[in-house]
Amino acid sequence: MKIVIINSGSSSIKYQLIEMPEQKVICSGMIDRIGLDTSNLTYTTATNKIVESLPIANHKVGLQKIAQLLMDEKVGVIQSTSEIKAVGHRVVHGGSSFSNTVVITNEVKEEIRQLFELAPLHNPANLEGIIVAEQIFESAKQVAVFDTAFHQTMPVEAYKYPIPNYLLSEHKIRAYGFHGTSHKYVSEKAIQYLTQTANHKADKIVTIHLGNGCSMTAIKDGKSIDHTLGFGPMNGLIMGTRSGDVDPSIIFYLIKSLGYSSDEVYSLLQKQSGMLGLTGYSDLRDIESNAEAGNKDCQLALAMNAYRIKKFIGSYAAVLNGLDAIVFTAGIGENSDYIRRLVCADMDYFGFELDLEKNSIRSKEIREINTPSSKTKILVVPTNEEVEIANQVYDLLS
Image (cartoon, rainbow, N blue to C red):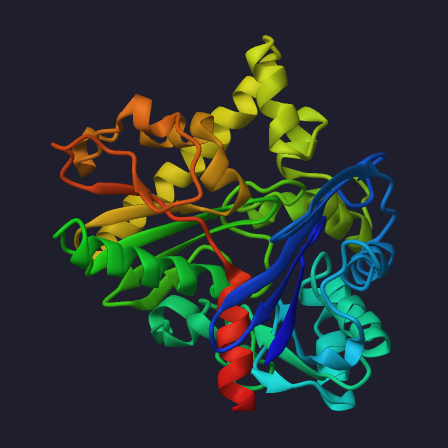
């Protein structure tokens, strides 16, 4: 069964064509920096690799470009869209409606639309991907895999907010958690590696997903028990354009004393804050290069970013009552030795000993970047949300 996986992020589209159940990746690629002056496109098959820099204004344009490549006469991998039996879509917010993978119907699309306010950078892009895919792959089943599903195992003391009870019972206001597909995939890979290869305990781990969106999960015995993101994907860690945790008093001060409207505050915290607000750049590669060139704002922003991650490692070590390993993943977590070095510095109490040489190596494999004497394992596990989505789509349709 050929399954196309579409993972529409806030500023990127990752895609794969996978033959299931063999998990054979026929084609893969990515478009990032969507909406900026220049976007980067990659398209890779067994015999071809295309790398282009071109303007991609939005997700619709990006998805149309991907479809053209898949069916291109010279570099394409399918003759007709009828070869595709299913399209699996990553959907960020499933609210209280979806705790499992589902075949997409008009009702499902409307539910995803109703959740736009809770995930304004993602759910619209996810729905756009679904609508375009329905037009391109007309005969394929469209399937939604929700980021919130993995965190359904969080205990009530973790997901309930200290606000009047009726807001949970009547309006479903609670912490849902996000990036669940990634956290599930890398935690399973890490547990397998730690127990089978490293002969190390893997009962208590913290997974750290760092990209344009960022989150951390406390995982005990393979299950999510706490997570940095909550009702919507904008709290917790400092992100590309999202603020992460801020004192709620700031919101009231902006509205009552500085004259901001609620919509302006919403836009400020979602689209103008985080690393963009601190530095003028939302892409960490730009921030790191400017920091290394002496830009003080960029240096401080990176330090703040790492400081926030450290705080959550400490709190999750307390929740887990110990720590066997931490796992870095996603675009920044896998590729930024700078951030990993900042996070792991001065963490002796937790048994962290980072091997600087191992940390500097780029690889697509699971790897330890700790010293042999480190009590806590420090892993880099490349995420593959697309394979995880393909597994769930195949299981549902089979």
